[in-house]
Length: 594
Image (cartoon, rainbow, N blue to C red; front, top):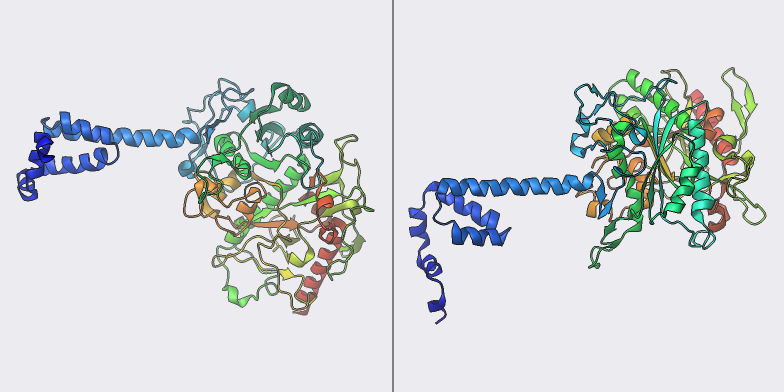
């Protein structure tokens, strides 16, 4: 009985044999049927049903054109959805770039796949502070970008810096040595931001700076006014508030989208991708990190010297097997590939507030503290860690002591046991001499290993092996990072296995980068300086010249690590400086003996 109730056209289709049907269909009809089945019935059933009922008698050529039009529309919709999100919307939260403050009316969108072909627009405005009528669509007069160059700046053409600050909480929650309920915005965030930006825009640097804030909460107008009033005149401000992305925090068990707070640290990548063409330099840090014009200046000077060395370096070197790791390669020449993998690095530091309650480590690694440094004229001179570049602040700035001594500055995420030193080959302007290679990189490609002299070569640590690249006690996550536009292009195009900019896709990323990747990965610099999954494996270096050394330290102004960590982790920067000097002298002795 059921068969009798079936519509006649279905019954006819049911009783036809496959052989008779296929033999009577023309080739074009076979193509149409296959396309209709694949494109409409499986993907959009309602269209398949409509074509079955209404379009069976239409001319085959017209039907083919109709189905082809449907395919084109599907491709267009998919393209729009993907790149629409890239241009200012992330996980349902709109990025206030077009209508917030003095920003551009239509930011220039950079697509990840097109980054290697990008050009620098000439005569266009300068990012957030650019004129409203700036035309970013007319790029006919653009100059080709020369990737790998450190930007030159003059008083007539100041360095354009976008300082991006990410903050999760407006008030402290009492964790990690903080005071519960404390107004973090007013007591930490604003004082640090104000002092950092003021140092950048003031002589002798005179950088042109704009600020972009990525916040994990909704910023009220009156609270925003506090930030605006604190910034120096001429500094642009844009805010992406309530920016925490949504995702499946535990993909295997979660059934509902929820805020993934660790993913807030990833949001700056979308901002940079939008603003890449309007700035020369990007400074990306957490809200309690003090970054000064001196830090940016020194970073550029070291980067420029590495560039000069790379220009003169050979493309390839003799086989690595001829140079024993961590000893024979102390003075080895470096190739272009190795030098392009090097970037200036930083170490977070705090000022010891009360050594009677929170003392530094009493038992140091078995490496002597030697503060007698070899000078270029052949003499020696006693040098101490200079606290001024990192940690001297104006009076009454938050809870920070204004002028701490060098022996009051403390670090907790590295030590001499994880340190490798080497001499920079002659070349460039000889701005660099001996450097330290910070931990992080691993799994080197052929010709990528950067050797040096490890502090444990002489057996100072017994049978202990050299710490691995990812050892958390020595990796010194920075609380942020800085890079020039050209360095970011080099990272994206040549160094990072999955690229630097979004989208973050499989197999190296899951859930657009939200799964497994923590705050340290995105804002601490692990994604750039480590050889972990999706890491770019860049090698951070620190210049060991006494007049340079202190500029590699960044003030963690919350000063809370000393309260929440055991004191054996707290190493005075002055002691660290002296221990590294001992390692350099041991390396020099080994060179002389060989």
